[in-house]
Amino acid sequence: MGTIAVIAVYLAMQVIAQLYFKWGSALDGKWWRGFIGGNLFGFSSIWLLMHVYRSMNPNIALGICGGGAFLLSQIALAIVFKSNISVTQWGGVAAIFAGMILLTMGKGG
Image (tube, rainbow, N blue to C red; front, top):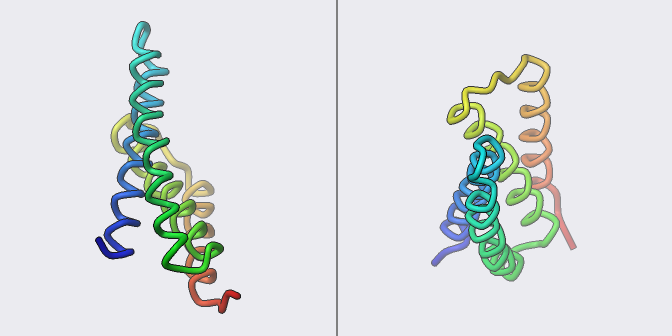
């Protein structure tokens, strides 16, 4: 599997983990299910991050994977749980995205 595919699967697994955590915290009696589901996806996705580290500069890998997981999780949580994101918060999302772009443009050692 290529690096881009591994990153895509990592991001998807991170988003699923966050959705499980939120789902488990929102419903009485679902906490353990959400906790277990979130950790299964979140913990196992770290294995993929280690593969990404092998193929690129670790600073860039973490910037893309960490930032991408955060951004996609914010959007997924807003859509699935119908939470509002303010204009200021969208500005924060844009700033993180810009930081990800700047990281990929830099030369790492």
